[in-house]
Length: 267
Image (tube, rainbow, N blue to C red; front, side):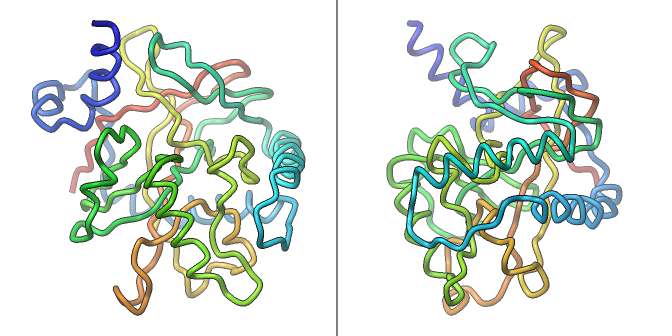
């Protein structure tokens, strides 16, 4: 029974009838679409300012030793320049598995504290097989899906799509988030658990950004943990959907990040 309960608790936020019955003023985070659009440029600039500070690298092949070293270096940069560092460990919520915590320092309200990694699917693209027993599917307001599962077929598809878009000797997406040592420490967003009640209220919210690939610095794309499922030749040119997690209040050292899976976009 405990196993069944844990499986249900990890799946119910993707089960539309359950969501419909449980949406109310206490369980939702409401975002005005106009405010969201106005905020996108600010968030994009904020993200750029973070990525520009990270230790750069030019290696194309997978190197776990290098990933581990860069993860630690960039954690220190995040702490020194932006006031906080992050760690992935067992959640405070029973049966929730891993969670994400402020390891040191304090993340100020409005700070980007995570990026939701994974393969980006348009609403008309096939994802049935990948979705089976997959609690890491994030649905955007317009139906775009991001598959943040770091194992199984989801992992294989991401690793297949990532080198496809390589530009010369430059990586154009992060693959280190598939390991325990993401070079960009923000690339843990899929492990942020849903908060609830007075004990663990949400302290972050999801915000969607369309990354303009025509103008976004190519040298920084290696830190972005997302890739489009289809190539340009298959699906035409399109920007890259990125979902960032933004602190809704100051989050202090030792606190776990909690989101709300009930985010309503008001037009």
